[in-house]
Image (cartoon, rainbow, N blue to C red):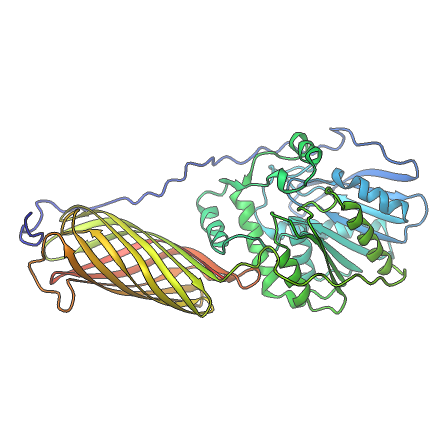
Length: 524
């Protein structure tokens, strides 16, 4: 094989390479069925309870549906219910009737895009839309139930909205109850970065799945959810996931501002939201009246599981204590690890397109870079680099970094890795040993990327020139735009486009380049 740097300048210069990341995903938003008050019919209500339908207009004009269950006499207090995904207010009827028989007025509304409310199905563009809807409904209830203590209940995504509303807007209520709130997830930290990365590119991508068999252990409940005409069955859009993940970051930015009386109930077997997040929120909330109740073996929908009656009884006892009744003492939650308590990990994914120039040739390539680290302050690290395109000839490069050590401090990480590689300008069968030193750290609204590497030839065509202490040398300095945000527990994550300057010395030939692409980074 001829020496790759003795062939002279290429006959033609590659002027443009278009880097395409295709997402074969539906880009159509679900239709808006409009307001549906009476269809399908409601289940019969006990004669000692007054149930009523009502509608109200959201701040942006969308019509939302609500209903109430009230005792015949004067209620001792009021519970406002905010449901979550794959849910609607009708499913709270048994709980509402239980409380109404105990003297409470219960009011519940269907989220925009859910149940009987209007709006494209499961579409939430901003978490503040949910907070605005909740505030409007609480104001309506306050007018209908003057001078009565109000407690707000929120489940799952509704729990996220209720928690964030209590933190940022601090409504004058007697307390809040959060059930399996959507403030933490037993998932890699990179999940948060991926949601924020995908949503602007494909806002209607169907990535927000809510498997019904994760909500309840009871087959009848799962089957009922599967055929419920008020539950939107397909996955929700990326824009809704983005709104939720933005809300999660805002909850954990200032949990100490949650000062109202707080009860959080969560099943330990929940596979949708992480009970560790509920534990941490109760620990970090700023009020003195805060209680965590964990239920062994319960799935996500705490009422529709074996043992759900126990949850309802505990919530009623807590409500009694916060509406003038006797104090209630719950046992301390068991200590130990909960779902969501993940070992310290870092994962980064980078895609880029690169144009390069040397005195011998010009070219363009596209690459994929994967890096992971396992450990806290000192961590094992490794990764994979793949690159293909044109430089002097069509080429590919593949480097496996199998040995490495990283030093971590918050969202900053410095790593030294080594491994074995194949391909490159010396030919498809060439092999080499790559070593890389890399440093990444957040800097304001950006993330700084700095890397340097050396490579030693093992096999394949020799370079004609001399690179010094090694056959190859590489360097990259760039910035990824997009702030790293704090999420649940110790999770930090960020994503965004990046721009970098690159340099390679290949057998004494200098190669300069510019790289553009996107990076996802997540660590806990």
